[in-house]
Length: 600
Image (cartoon, rainbow, N blue to C red; front, side, top):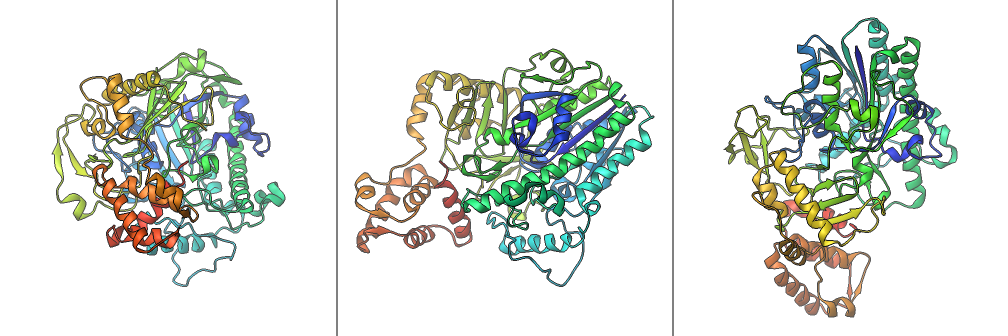
């Protein structure tokens, strides 16, 4: 028995033909759908990249206890379990964050692994001279990175690396699939192996040979405008279209690479005994809801309702669709079950053999989200996004024995006051470090929203239904209890650890923590507001502690009166805000105000 997983990064299912896209050039994804079972309601669990990969290994949620980090000493790892039980596991990947501080324990769980370098500013080729960068290229301006210099390093390195990509076979994605193809060709007659071919694409930047851009003709006017930023859509219509079609061009390249795997399945008659899974870690917003990318906004379905295709030779089901609610945490148990290995008790996921066979339901509902953002729950019909209830997003802690961020270790300041937490049910009796989240958290409050995704599949308009919300809030609590969520997570979003929420409490919560804080009705109506200034000031007022809001509004009124203003300008707003925040946080605050003010 053999198994192959093809894992893409940031795959938006609405760009795939079998999920309804009529213009994308992706015949092999269509061919894949015809030869597998396609899941309609597969959901991510923890976002983004490494939190999702921790779930692929461990079969349990990451985001309730931890943000981005490595596998922990107490974690179960599906590839390692295979390795320890006579099933050879191999990884071929160009996901450069496996070799960063915050991902450095994943690849070594496999029997063997192959590194492909060069994606997304990967510190790869050394060059002192600053590279030439085309005029139509645009650097992402993500002020949530540690510094502008850090951003410049990534941007500079990206263009050093791109000098190496002269032909299709030079690109990291092509090399990754070539490594996977070579493994299959060498081992297709052998038994008991698992291969994970993992492509960083179609993650940004959307770097492709000219032939893929040419598939979309005049839609791509700036071939080097290929890196969307993590912010609301503010570009002109031509640049928006350019970025979307650059994503499509990269997806078409992914399609060709996928076809190489399908060709080998045909060539070696591997359909008779080889499990094939094609999936992604999460989606990606390409203008939907007025946003680019991920991480900075609510977990809309374009981000979390992910494409999933499975061929299981035991069931022989192909060309069919399944509606049961499944998640990424189900893939590790499914692979272990395929090799007739026991599933560790700490895995929350469920094997999907019977769901593939007859759409058997494996869960009533599920959770998903980012650490410190809204906690989200879906029951197949309703999506409930519950926001923090304290106006400070606190208390919030990281629980870990591996204190690293994406590309750095935890700082001395973060570590100096850590506590020792008692074991969780899944830490194998080990106590962990309990580290307070001190820095300004990028996952600011969006409030609480409820969507009926049957009537409103694109989540355009939140609904108000107190009975449904009460049901979803208590369902969320139940799932958090099953996950042994830290007690402060209940506090942070206004739920009880020891009992259900009552209707009266929910009504009080909704009244106290409204998503909008009105500055002053008379002042709003009597003044002219330049651009987005009213929303920016409203957003700033909503960032401060609840008891300080009236004081802040009074200060605003006094300054407007003193300066005898009739028009509120961007310059005035910037001055008002910056006078009230720490010097170190000013750029970050202004950036987030811009995002908050556009949240609708």
